[in-house]
Image 1 (cartoon, rainbow, N blue to C red):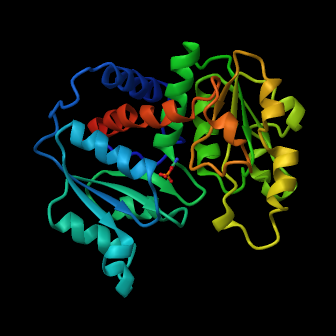
Image 2 (image 1 turned 60 degrees about the vertical axis):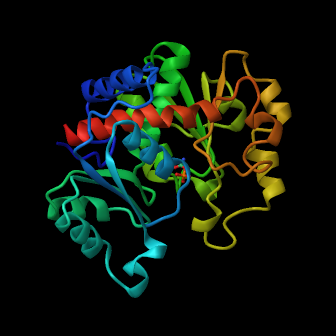
Length: 294
Ligand code: CP
């Protein structure tokens, strides 16, 4: 039984094992393989989600897990109950693992030290989103065969992005080269020692162009220029997409701000892997839940 708090704590072998197991589940034609049918898992989302929440549920149900869905807005959190007391409450009822999404960074680590069940990080603040990076790495592997030697540009709101951080840790461990592109107001200066910041023109010359959502809900007012100005300077517009190498793939963790960081027509273009990324989220989370529970 193992927690998954971040990609930072995994080594190359563990990442490869998870990606190989993802491929195994991805290639199963039978939808229901109830190998975890005697296990109870609570999906505890203290922050909103569509993809992560439902693909965990899909993955768990495909493995026969008994799923309990917890949503903060419909719980005693609304009466002021803490995250810790909530997790301890579900633990005391007998869950075998918890999938947790949190707004603040750093809380998950403390939480995992206080409970005895494995916890899986479904996104914590701007710290890590390990299953997103795994599904991104799996999507890249599926497209290119291997991660080693790939050039990956991560473009946009790096400062607030747990996706950028988890991908940075994972991709560099796997031998890919990561570069960032962001306006000054969205840079994370502490990450510059691990990946260079390049111009938009440079960033588009890559095997993978990963666009990030401008996280409007996390910006203090005034940080973001107008959406149109952002699109003009840092958006993957149709014009820019048309100039990409034909083998370059376009990714985005979603949800997408259409016509801000990426043009509407580019989202479902032939080079886009945005919907396949979502599909790959299910086998990735099957591999992660298996690791957590077996
Ligand atoms: N990519 C992602 O984490 O999406 P959700 O916030 O909808 O889960």
